[in-house]
Image (cartoon, rainbow, N blue to C red):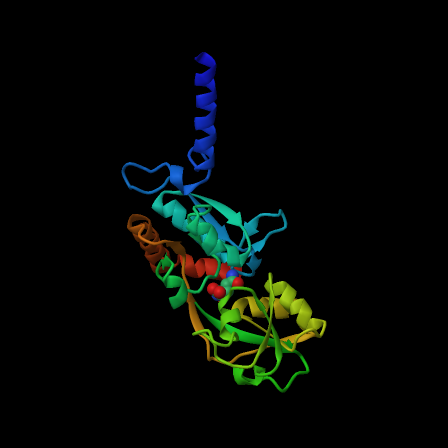
Length: 265
Ligand code: GLN
């Protein structure tokens, strides 16, 4: 009997672990502050491959404008922030399974994503641009990418803007090469694997600044976007707290200061 009891306890423990009870940083077992109704800790997913918004610093830690912004929002709203770095196209999936609670990743608040997640108010206006070889005078607009080989970061709005059939597509007939990192797309361009890279404006500027003799940015205002913080649908208390803190940092000049500090202008 005693032995059977032990086996039963063990089986229950295994079942609890498998079902996610007793996990560590999982949204199922969040500690909630009884006064504010907010979680005491929020696990925020990012993809630290997108300077100046997020990158890995010299100490191997995620840093950047977005990271500083979410820390500031956490401080003001009263929750601790833990950053989790992962592939960009894994972020929303990870949030849907409770691996992370929020996403800040220079993520465009686009209509397709809004079907899956809620977004905070916007915090940064951006857009898609092209990067080409310095001596390329042929590619001046998105239309010029038709029938060309173009590299993008997989799962981004840059990817969608050249993917035929997608709502966001602005040019047909592009041969799209999807890479895990924007930086890899740029290396491929420099090595002659593709004729252009489509990527967000500020990361494009930073990549070009790192290789000024080889590549340049080409701007076509066709794709304008706004970055926002993604959260699971229906978490109104959390969303309100994030929006309130965001409104404060915009109002009191903190957001501008961070933009200055991280060269995100
Ligand atoms: N703004 C783009 C998007 O949301 C790219 C973001 C990124 O690569 N971090 O898809």
